[in-house]
Length: 149
Image (tube, rainbow, N blue to C red; front, top):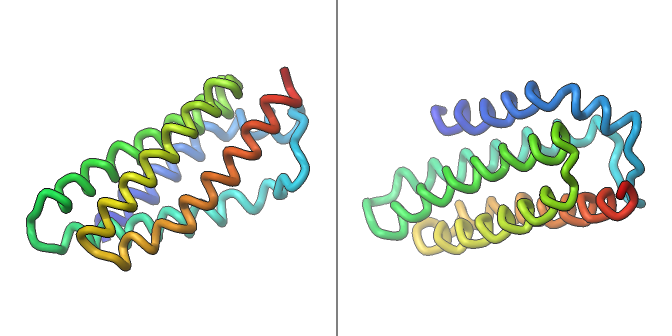
């Protein structure tokens, strides 16, 4: 329950801090094809944060090991990167920098997922939707950057 509250709390805080940036983004920014309506994002992120929380809880409950410790550290690092991307993209509107930040986030998620796999395979598999969504976010981010230079 703590992991769920922490993870969803990070998402909620991010959403709160970027609310004005999202309004500006929705009203003023040209978006690439396949851009979902704004309502889709909070729903998808709530599900992804829940899957992250369940996954990290499963890892937390495994016996102490190097993989477990590394997975927990990577979870915190990628969550911080996730939080930072929203601020860079929506509030600062630094789309190019945000794209490279997102690429780093994707690499961290891959690393975390592989590390989770060593500790708890179901926890790793729960991260696949997150990996795919961030890959799709990369497409959207790159499209926004190209269309709004």
